Image (tube, rainbow over all chains, first blue to last red; front, top):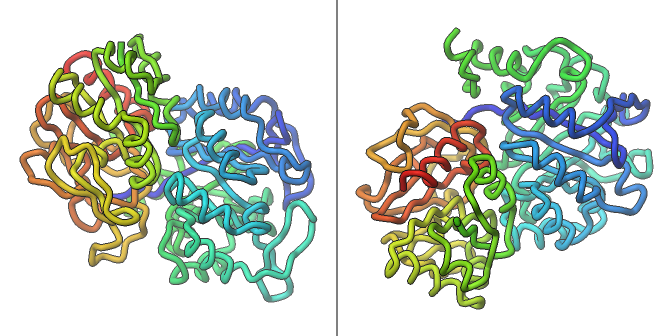
Length: 257
Length: 202
């Protein structure tokens, strides 16, 4: 039976790790290689590395950074940040990434999803959608423009799947870095909309939130703050998922307990 | 020397790093002579079968791999798309021929009656049958899968399955030819153990 994945997210501003609050306030957290090394020893299921300034600065995530991080890992690595072309995708994969996360560039040029999917397979293509509440409505938030843009995130999710996305990374911008609990209502809306796996991110404060997000329709949980700033580890999240009767991949130590 | 066959698709560095970790000499190559000189071959790959098949045919590697595996009996390990390429044909983007080293075909997971998400992506556990490659790996061990297509072949070639709605082929074996649908190079310690078995025993 397929396990629900716990995926730490490492955000970088080019070269060092940082964590944002609602995509804005930043805290610097040092070297991405050190952070990756720590996660590698912690039996995490997968890792996501995102350069959140690449797109805005009209560049791609640095290939040597991908290479340095990939060389520390024997687990799947997704990278994102400023990936604009099929060549950029190929470079990221060559440097050791397994999947790429497309966000603003896919919004500007949706054929990047279909092209990337055609050449590398849809399992390589993660479409990341940043969603923010505008009154009672959910809208797409552009990190580059620092504002809400008038695209319906649910229509975009369906289109991304049609064009060849293999997974969706759903980020709740309002909950980013707040550790105030996830937006389960948002996740529920995706439940019957797409068939590809949903990786849910934003607001996780405690391991039980992961269980609730899975019940709301998430296949996998991505998180950063809880692992950077609290005592909870990815193993704690997986233990909680396992305890609730859902499948998680436990470490050898956990299995022996 | 183990040759990791470079079809210019997907991530193959991690396979090389896993071999490096084990101290096994290896080279990422599409060079005919280097492939001929290698003692074992690994055909890795993430990607689209039609594209991979086209590239292998165009570069002449299709025939070379076949003759190395069949005539020279070199141990060959296909990983993910590499495993799918071991079969006769696939229906990903039309009908395309594979290496034909194991009788069988590759079909879409979406053709199944269940409504589970495709790609089948993430950590899933194995039901292990008799196998040289999976020596020491118990049933229940988790490996990382990421695929939208699955192999269909006679059960005598199947060395492990995994459950995704129904049983899905997870590993195949036929003489000196081995294939795994999952990614051992991404499956942490259990995956490294499997690669070590390929290097030392197979």
